[in-house]
Structures are given as structure tokens and as C-alpha cells.
Image 1 (tube, helix red, strand yellow):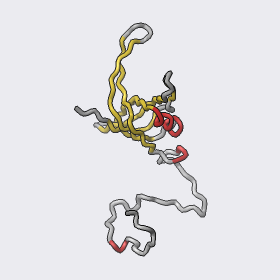
Image 2 (tube, one colour):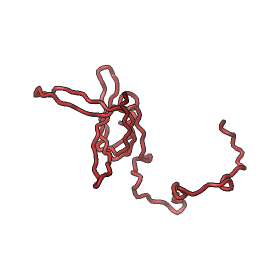
Image 3 (tube, helix red, strand yellow):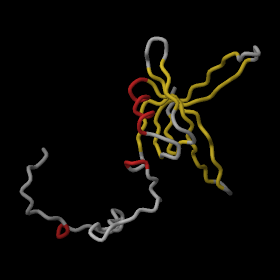
Image 4 (cartoon, one colour):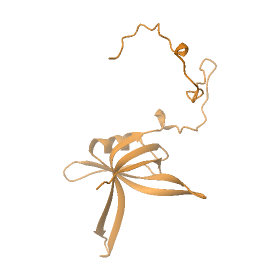
Length: 145
């Protein structure tokens, strides 16, 4: 059997960090993930993160941050204060990758550049054919292997 989930989306709220009575960190947040069908639809998926990764998420993620989450789907039941049984479906994250740029600015956010700073487009040559003439072989750096 196989239970693996990979999601990429934006946080709908700041992560909420709590600690268990044993002192183990747990963070929860919700991720908005788009679906492409005849019209765009969005799923809001609850995420649970434990231990050091939970503390990192609470420190570095905020509402609107883009993140990739890898984990497993979990369904649990509990009884609310009125005695009614409730069922919750959530993703327990094994790995959370922070995809928003440092400083929390979203990838499409406007950015100002001063005269000395060049606007750099790392994707301008995407799909361009590469030849050996494009590679600088005169670099004296150590070979990494």
C-alpha cells in the first residue's frame, strides 16, 4: 500500500505553533492548491508539521507564502464538546520546502531597482540549445568530484 502526497500552494493563514505536554513542537496551517478543470478551482488542505520542521515553518512561513509539502494523508476522528463525532482529513508533512523568495516577497511582487542594480532574468534562456562553445572551460576552480 502507498500513501504519499505532494502539494504546492500558498498558505491561507500564518502557521500556528503549539507544543505537546512533552514539549514536542507541532505547527498547523492550511494550503490553497489550485485545480485546473473547465474552470479554476481551489482546494484548501490542512497541513500538520512536527518537531524542528514545525518551528521552521512558524518562523519562516506566513500567510501568502508559497510552499511545497510532501507527506501522507491522515484521516482521524474525534468527539467535539457537544459529543458529536467529527472526521478530519489532513496531510502530515514529512518535508516542507519554502518556495517564496527571502524576505517574504511573492514571486510576482513589484520590485524596485536602483541604477546600479541590474534586473536579472534567470529564465530568459529557458529552452535554448546549449553547445560546448557556451561553456567556459578556462575556470580554475576545483572539480567537485
